Length: 116
Length: 119
Image (tube, rainbow over all chains, first blue to last red; front, side):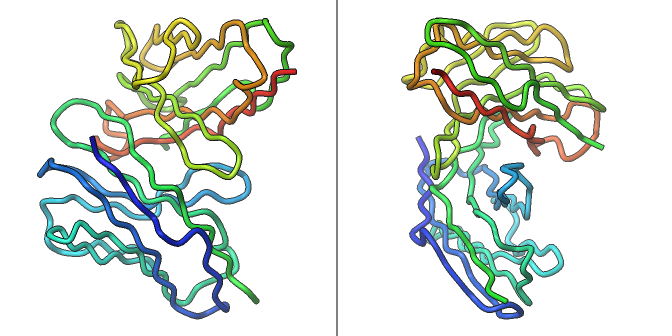
């Protein structure tokens, strides 16, 4: 079984600053996906960014980028030029990609607060 | 595209009664849907995997006789909480995997969730 660990329960930064959220995971699998999801107060899960484990290049989506270190089993999320709307819970998630359909294993989440 | 709906959004029921939650993929077909549970200020926990036309697969520790899952069509999965008790009060979220190219094959699209309160 895989585990996902987010060691920062809460983080707070000023608007326009850059913030990095940490995530580590443990798995014996070699083929998998990693995700960062955002959950605002509405509780709707929103995909922020995804990374296929076989890809060495780090994924980027506008202001969001990841630092994927496969050997270290680390998958951190960097948010540049943070905005008030980025305030939310952020969950790191793992999904096995062995060919079948697998559910997501989530970390405990990081509550990110962007201060004006 | 790739919208998933849940109904109801909120439900209050009395202890001992059953309640059904629907999860629908509105603009794509989904052979597989997932049900998650989220307690207040906690993370999402996978409860079960729902496959169209076959029995659901439950995660360890989830009572299959208490949480009945039916995936009768490519766009609908239902979760029935039977003989509900106050400890079943939680936020239930479904997600669906796209079959027909509505998005990446491995991306799960989430519904807005259902808040269940058992009194």
